Length: 467
Image 1 (cartoon, one colour):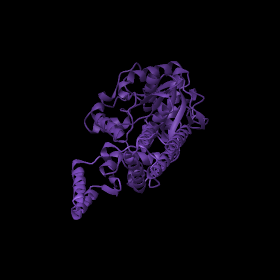
Image 2 (cartoon, helix red, strand yellow; image 1 turned 120 degrees about the vertical axis):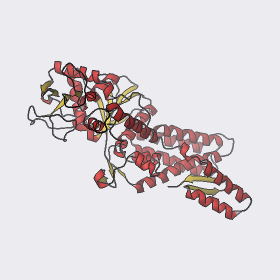
Image 3 (tube, rainbow, N blue to C red; image 1 turned 30 degrees about the vertical axis):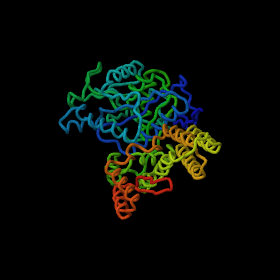
Image 4 (cartoon, rainbow, N blue to C red; image 1 turned 60 degrees about the vertical axis):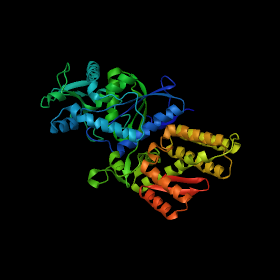
């Protein structure tokens, strides 16, 4: 099944047509490592993780790259303030990012290059741009002349006809809708030696935008299939990437652009001044489940704003528990018969709906709906005795296939009882057998205090996590 995906460049939903099918070569703009990434960043990282997983599910082979920006204005300032160098400052933040990625069940990329390890590639690209007439030098720094590329502004639909020639910007980030010649190489004689590199045009360091162009083309080629990032990167960052790359090579840079909408917190823009600014680690330390955070982020289509709230996080926990409880019930199925027609029909319906949802512009809300419909159908079939052991195995296998895309559907290792919880669970079971009901109730209450909710059924006692 092919994937139809919105392309920011054309403004339309199009079939993804890789250059070398079935391989899709894909680049995602990664973190700038001067702090932990926040949940708004992870809205993009989770969406691009599901995109990679969905591509593989639909039969594509994926080669993926995510960069690490470990040199830019803020990093150099913070490193100097901390009396260290770039590596000493960024290493702990890179490790923290990798921990948060693992907590959010985001699969590692094939390549995770750091900007500081690819300065020669950036220098070489700047030399190519200079040779093709796209640069000029001012105050010792090298700038890209956007007027030299007539198609500049196409991705962001920015009208650059009236810009003032020679107006330039030296810092790594600048105001949106303010097109100016941007810096490729900064002459920074006032900065520490550990923040400078030698180059034919003088010692200095690269601008932010040139980093992604050089690294993406090194690992994926001068023209590749898919570039992903948040909508906040469309301009100036991605527009400038296109300018640098196509200006340097004379070839199309990226065929398909995938952009993820913003995250809101309680329907407001997230900011430290509003007190609604959260890192993944903040939420986990407060006792919230990473799989519930991931589920919440998947409930909205990637091209629509998603609203984060603690109430919504509670609803996500409840939705996951419904799915996880169904998975835990499957071993209760009995009988040695074959998979019943009813189970086969439920599985076929769910698979078709799931695949169609993913193929239709990565529609994760509809994919989740297909999962919940299978859970509803499966629970009804279990109650009516229509699920044999082989049928239960087929249902479990289907959930596992879906989980290879969504990565939240199966109970995690964290859902196993701790030694203390298991001892209390066993104590309650033993007390009930001996009809010592007061002691059994005390064990239940202790488990509830630990967040473990018990459910007594005709087939035994089940447990689940509460909030």
